[in-house]
Length: 149
Image (cartoon, rainbow, N blue to C red; front, side, top):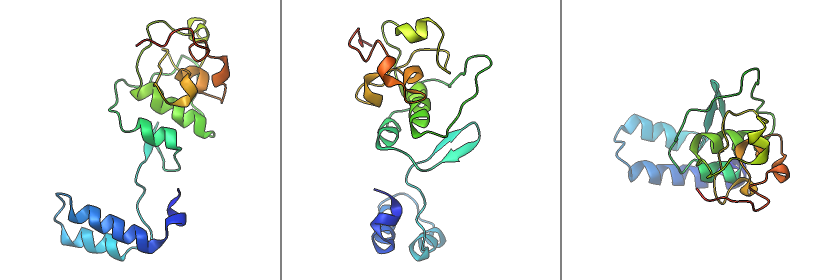
């Protein structure tokens, strides 16, 4: 659900409740948030210095996990965040787990990332490299070859 769908009144109440129940005791911060007509984004991702706030449910779910590694792109590759699937792939790459064996695509050094990483229950069961560019269906891990981690 997007912020504009929730309505300003709900957001003010929700943020104020959150601030009241947190360790933040700065009254000016509380007043600024409760009087604001725009709510701050609940989740955001910073990729190569750029902040993204329009996140899919999968991305938000994966953000619940802590980062396990720094994302490393293959030599000569650039990250393109034009698709939400690519942002999902980045977060998966950062927070997912290494599978027991790489998928066939990653074994052949395809995809933007240097290693094969999966995040069970997210990105359609594929690895981050295959999910990048909305091509999850090519992943041999998704096709059921082994996802033990």
